Amino acid sequence: MTGRVNEGSGPAAKGSRKAAARPGGRSARVQESVHRAVQELTAELGRDGLTVPLVAARAGVTPSTVYRRWGDLQELLSDVAVERLRPEGAPEDHGSLRADLGAWAEQFLEEMASAAGRAYTRDALAGDPDGGNAGQCSEYAAEQVRILLERAAGRGEAVPELEKVMDVVVAPVMYRILFRPGPETTVGEEKTGAAGAAGSGAVADYARRLVERLLPG
Image (cartoon, rainbow, N blue to C red; front, side, top):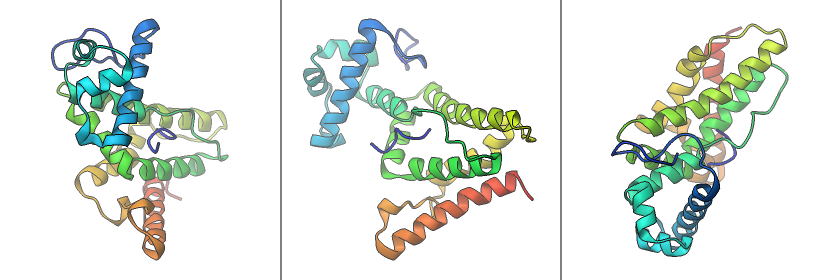
């Protein structure tokens, strides 16, 4: 899920009004304007300064439109977070599965462990009573890994199962970020000078150790 971090809509059961697919037409324009309003106001006022009336006024819609579509501010923030976690494109091609997966894992860890990545993850899960957002974010990562595996298979390389990559590389990263943070999940923006360089090195080393565990030899 790379490229978005550092910078579903429609009727549903109570507890989640969002869908994984992007909406179209007027619905898409409303979502875009409301999401943009959230991002602008967060930058200006901070997250604690947000209210539905403020967001609606900035977006040029009525508060009832926001409530009808998202239910409350937390679900709106959750929807924005899921969209911001969506990857912008395919992972880079470095010529081999080991190189591709190593580079992707390092970037994934750096982005998800950043202050923005942690905030988006918290928001995505906080407004997710039915688990749909967690599943969508997991699918973002799975799709990126799937691209790497298909690319490697096309080169004639032996490739592991998708779920094995998720279990060995992606799951430990998210567990460390959410439940057991340490040097491996402390990115450069949280440290300065030599400490920042050391932290970045620890992040890269951890990501590549996970890949080595998956692809030994």
